[in-house]
Length: 394
Image 1 (cartoon, rainbow, N blue to C red):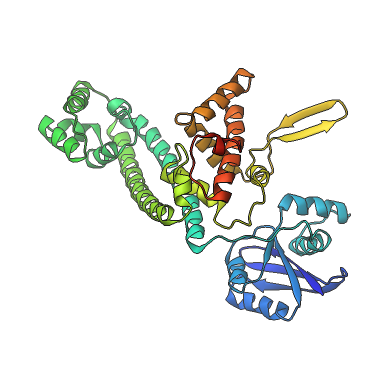
Image 2: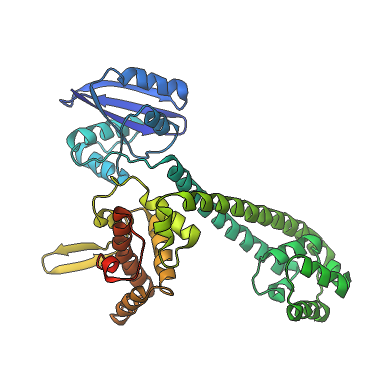
């Protein structure tokens, strides 16, 4: 007999609902989100002959615990569970126990359509997490740089035009050492030149331009404003400097895993991928070849495949919304980057633009084509080359 176990997981505890093969209620209980609670669940289900465990959000300590126990877990789309509840629960009520019961019932009625959660190798799971962390850190870096930009404009407007790349390393270090205009103005030309050279700003013509801008600039700012904002700017510079250093450390670890992985050579051969984009693409596809049976599954999951709607004579094509949006963003970046280095990608993009498609629609259509090519390389284990053999998949 098969038992269907629905789990509504949260940060503090998990609601468990178990049904038997006939759809009859078996048991319902709550476990804490710790090892003691996980053992309680395992002791309860270890005697069952067959089980199916479903989650809406298949990640966290409980999922790792079940993986270590070699128990198969099924990942269920939250939108499908929501619609299933709307169809089967007339009252429209919602709580964690109802959600757990709905997951168990959905598993029982749709077991043939549910796919188990596939795991990658240990190295690739680590790379996947590093890619997520790298993206978060990149977003934080941009956020703090915008804050720094705002603060600089309030009291030290010279830095708007001092360097072409706002927030570059030499500018951060200069703000740390000379946080106010008066401090920078009091430094001699030789001192500023030595400082710039020390921080790898060695083009003499550029150094003279920076010094000229400092000497020809003047401003009137109240000491109170300058004092207050200089404190904030120093704090922001310290945060940005730390994030930059940690980003380098994360990228170094990503590079190590990416290059030593057997599939790393395949993904590094993609035009314009590099280490960061290549690592993200490798993390998306993984090294468990059972994950995708065909390219269309990846296209739908990652949101590059358009969604068709037809009713009578009415027909429209829209962007797919129920998908992995972060994965779609990665594929969009890669497709855009490939325009410089791939002849067929550029030709396809130009053809889409001639049809009247916008830039974003054309790039998204190109990323949909790229998934077919990447899927073929991934499945067959071959290196990318711009020849008919590889491009036939697109």
